[in-house]
Length: 285
Image (cartoon, rainbow, N blue to C red):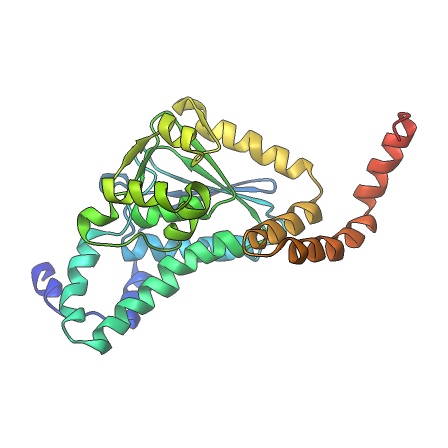
């Protein structure tokens, strides 16, 4: 049955129906106060993005994005990997679909846009602060999900795998945008052609990770950073993320205008007024 299914075209609706019928959980969620830890949990397949895992991840993140009690989302994987990227079996299943021409290609486009792209958009566009705790190899779309987060902390076992070209693909799901802005065009293209597999130290040197910590301390360090985020007034984190996400694509004057609109809102909050009173009481002007 499995071999026969591999030869049949698939549709987006069919994939979603299969995901909704799946009873096994491939994504786990832990809540501690305002911090939610989301773990991709299919370690025998290196947390590759099977339809069920990707769909469950999307649904979980959507729920957290809509939850006013959540301020920080930590995204990680079950050891030994963060995420191996797109599931090769799903890619193989897509071949008979694509052979149908434009209609078949549209079915694949729907999955890539609504599920792969849907997760990346949630991470970048939600007001929640997102931390990628990269515990092992992050490849393909999995790497794009890590890059979509606001802070990347890697364990000493972290690897950023830029092997798109080796399997006949371009960098995907926002990876081109992320790499060229972090590294510039020439270095990003060099890493793509080389099919680089960057260890944690090299990724840190290039600025692709914010910091690297011992593997056993990864989640604790991520939670400590989450606590620092939660110590900053909620509206300030949300407004700053919204502005910084746009700033790289704006002129200086446009960025300044956004800041000018946001700043008066900050003046109205008790958190700001209390901080000013504290500084005045301490004799600081």
